[in-house]
Image (tube, rainbow, N blue to C red; front, side, top):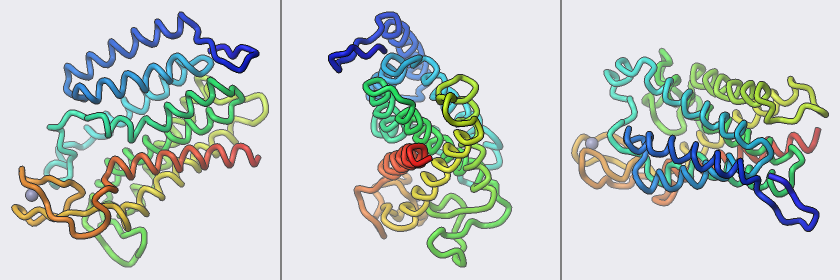
Length: 282
Ligand SMILES: [Zn+2]
């Protein structure tokens, strides 16, 4: 995108056309494979276009988001059989609806829009902080399930909780958090999303790592405190879901509004902000 001197923005036609084609093709494939439902398709399309067409060299930003999706999908599949045997594999049945897409990509899109309006590299760091948090959180959940010992509650490390419990942390999960952030940081550096004229590559990588760590820690803290938890009357399991075994569940703690999507939305926002703050302080 090119900023004109009047303060308005002029989108590059070619970037818009490329973005429309890329988002449409990927969206249709995701719809066909039932990764998303129609509302998820619409949300992903809007977010995708913003990220592809608005910031300078937006296609590079778009590739970073694609890397998040590919990495998340790979690690969800990783040792899927073991995780399923343990009973923790994500239910694959439901296609993602718009709240899930906005929860993971909303802040990334906002910061992409911001960088397009005020291109300085600062808001690009926010975008990377948001994507790093989403990636780190997904890997922490998927890899953390394989930790040999039970996770411990982030608000009370003496308390052991069942694997997969919101707010539970484990050494393997924390390592996975770092891995997720490193993948996004390296992708950003190799593609040239983060500006390198002022700060060294190591510093950028460190900021993204820190952002992912802060975002995921907030995710765990909210999960341990105000996130709504429910009990299934059919199988007796505690769940984050308002529905289980095909029936409505009973809320046992936390807020009914703070569901998993809301937690992800807040934590990616915090990850984004911490990257922006640290970058601007250095
Ligand atoms: Zn149940």
